[in-house]
Image (cartoon, rainbow, N blue to C red):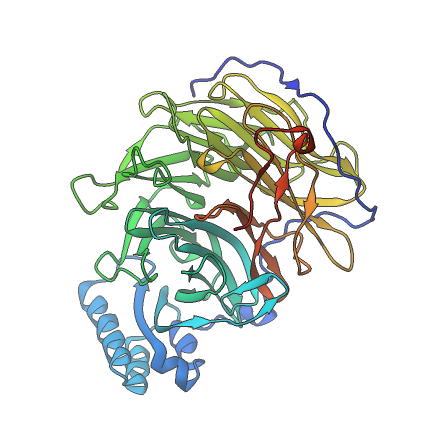
Length: 500
């Protein structure tokens, strides 16, 4: 790997810090729970049998094999799906049984004829979808029509899956337009919007050495039956983590779709195509990364207003160090950026970039039992780094940070806290060039699952919102106005994230 010159980071000036309550719990970042009944996994026919009559009528289905099936077997699956979609549900189930679907890697996708809605709101928080045990959400929007999209993983009974959810009214209401289900856990998902489509990539035990891409309409969230799914990563080591990135937020471009993945052999692979999603004049093309030491915590971001390095990523290496990686297309480069032995203790590492200013946030623990939110920042495309704190380490479980730097409005960082009865989510904001952090504000109305990752993003109409996992499901919550230090003294950028 081409390595940038390694320089010791310089700490940024001190800032206003949080003063949070103390507690004595232990930080953990668990995966979705696995029920005891998973010892005997159901097949795809069992998933269909569990549907209520109204759900059967509402479900337009597609089957997906985990490996290459002979054409006659694919025809059998297509025939069963056609029977189901014409209302002949029992015949479809009998055909699946005759096919011998039990024990085979066959998943089912549900394209809902009438999208599923949830009217569950709590104060200002709006529930997204109807799933309860959720994890790994992604949040993005279409800059043209303003529609907002969320994907999430879920566990339901003895099976696992993911859903696509749509809001056409700036997050006031949500509908689930698509669900995908199988009998073993999903490893990772990624999502981003480009022109007319929402692109979603997945990796799972279902097809362990592959990453598969689907796409959905940005108008109504409907599944693209013509595109169906495309395999981006094929063969070799198992796919552990995936990220989908586009330049859709950059009006000067809005024409590229990127896919990054961390494999079990510690390599990071990078593929690219154009706005046609690999089915037009530009097929999915692999580009070199030079990365052979990646383990986990992959995150990636397009560099709006870039001059040379247009795509950035971060990951945790085999030495537990935090790495920055970027590329010009022909010249990938990266280096370890954290101070040697910098106390990263697990969980997500997130990245945001704007005009060559890069911020990476993560949880650190300088001593046992103390946890804080640290960031590294570079003002020169990742050549040199300095560091600071969004929240100093303390005897609290500060968890699952995320950061956005979209559209030229500075960086907004959010994180969770394990605080007992009600676990808050905190937010802070600063400009790109200066550490003029505002005072941290807790904004959530519902007790979060503090170990499950959350997401923050700028809204198409202005302001910011986060998606927060709770014991009641996933919720959409707007951030409060984020006043900067110096507002009362005539700061020319007095706030960011104003809720319309």
